[in-house]
Length: 599
Image (tube, rainbow, N blue to C red):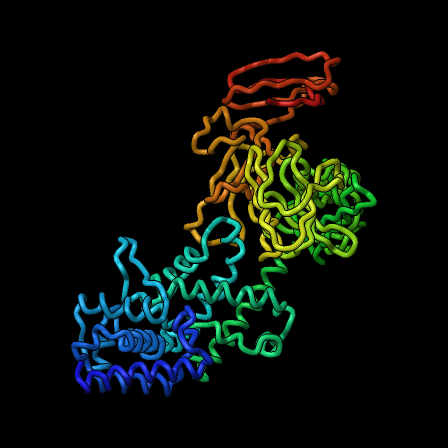
């Protein structure tokens, strides 16, 4: 090696030693290159050094040069990459006045990244090494493009955080979520590259964890609070922090994360029904129903008066009075202002739904079903969290809860439990066995279905699915009975690529014959990990099923006409009555006033 070669090599090695010494290091410590936070002065100095040494033949084998070159490439991407640069080496080479062949890069990049910086090389899906993607991902996000797309990126980031918790519960990875949202956005194409997707995912996860760890959603100025409790929090992000705009941009992302987390936690608390269990009353569930100032509902028939008696009904019977209210009627709808915004009572039949019912003169003129009012007692795991000497129901089936002091009521069926660090409880909740869970745990309960309950995590639980179909208007068992198979849709989740699987009594809905869909069914919704997110008992009647009451020739005569083109068997619950059946094409006539069960 010539004297000039030695001088060149020494320059690279000396520069690297100074770079590490400024950070209190003697050698690299495996961190991503963006976490060294090279300053603008260091970046300019490194650029001058590399331009000065050029591309002498011996440099291609020198570790010091390779380390400087890889660091420069990553910083160039973070600081100088622009929309027109494309995904290519040429703009980097042009900035240094050099050019390397693919063979030369296969030697330089691993020598710099793996041997010196102790960082792994990324791979394409074809398992070929991705040198350019590796260096660009080590630099972080292209900041010039971020500044150019500031408002667009904030909007995209808000969408990602808004759907973060539900996507996790659905078994949808944060990488897939980010990729889907970005592809639908107006961001430059470079943000769709795997390296950018991975970095944005990292930012979303890191900011969400900071918000939850330090309860930043409870502060009007989350940046100010985090600066107090964790002054160096910005060092963990792939942004040039010596740039005032970069700091401002990251502050904006933290505020977005705080707002979205607060909004998501408020939604998860539920605006309608809350259910509590107390150890002193092991066989009771207490309900607290929160109501708006005003409600609107369709009326069944024109009432004789606009003064309604309002009540909460359970299983066809009044369980709590809401008092009188005057209604305004328009287009077959009634609008009433409520005198009570909250009602508390003990559930008698917690497995059925609750409704707000309006009556006049003892006759029901309209009703509204209260969403998420059914509790699948004994059917799925019920997750309760500690809430000031009582236990609040926070999740049914698979769920994630933020609380780390949790009581899980197990299903009646025999199950196996994995991931549980504790001893099964002796406490009985509504006659069910329980598990007391403390801290951050990931518990799997396996039986006919698989349930996963995570504690000390991002909140994601109740009210995730809607049943969309034609509900029958008369009292039925099960409480929710539909004409035809209802469609189950996910709430607050507009990502089309998230795939849920639907089952009836454990059989995939796509494989069920029409006859297998009728009658009492357990509907299950599972995520891509086969974990059950919802399991509910419903009734399904043929889509053309109809009941009609007809008067007879005399005042005490008449008939009930049951019509459907599908085979249908009816069984009278009162066996002492005399029954005359009259069958005709597609229908059966029965005497009126009979309590009849169909199967």
